[in-house]
Image 1: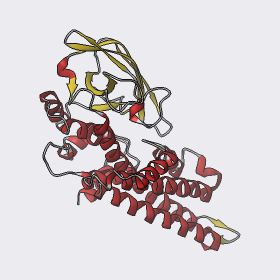
Image 2 (image 1 turned 45 degrees about the horizontal axis):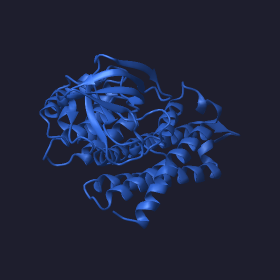
Image 3 (image 1 turned 90 degrees about the vertical axis):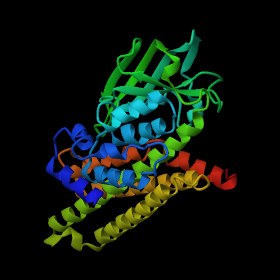
Image 4 (image 1 turned 60 degrees about the vertical axis):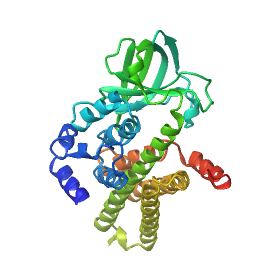
Length: 351
């Protein structure tokens, strides 16, 4: 019912500003994770699948799934207050973790937090902060001790968008999503701006990454299903040599192969969602899902464009926009090779 009503809402309001209405009128704010409450991973997956099918680029993943999990995992009053404002649509926090030159290992974060009095001073740069265009707060991962590559020493700070010394440099990704680089020059943070234990952020970040990947896999499943349907429709209408393209056996075989990839992606995505609360299976299930979904994104995406011919690369044709989105999902929070390596390492040496 949640997914059906959401899809109806998205169809009826296509092309309109959606975020405030999704939070207030539709009630997505109730899906913000709460400390001690039942997990909402399945609901998050259903929402992301609907977003993928309708190519919605609202900051549900960044604000409610990723930031929401981080806020729910902190017992601080500041985190609870920010979570309440987020659920009401009055605030939108997003995570800033990536830095120039680093890959997907969070232990590589090196932005420094230098002690000053009872607080810290932040200097450095964050890049590709998703959802930054609408963000009111940034949850910034910084190193309060140790060196890049060490597990201990990472901490999480909350910064308001207008914090002194913080510059936001916005731009757009290939799929139209808004991102920004953050430049920090002597940005002061107080003890109350620290969320959670000082130096113990890495495990929480890895948990949140798995939640985000499972949600992205669900979004990919929705987008890939729509691409397959659009391709089927096009081949059924387009004629060549006096016959519909869908009558040619080689194209029928291609559609079947696309459908099989879609089935595997959907199964792997749902298994990852169901495994998020299982400490032993979570990481392997999520990495396996990312590998399967990455393969599906590449095969279905490229096949859909090829079946549409040259017009499949034109922005005027919807399938080209879906292709851009699934191509980015294939690499977000770690590409296929990264997660294949992670899965192999976990399989040989389980936690």
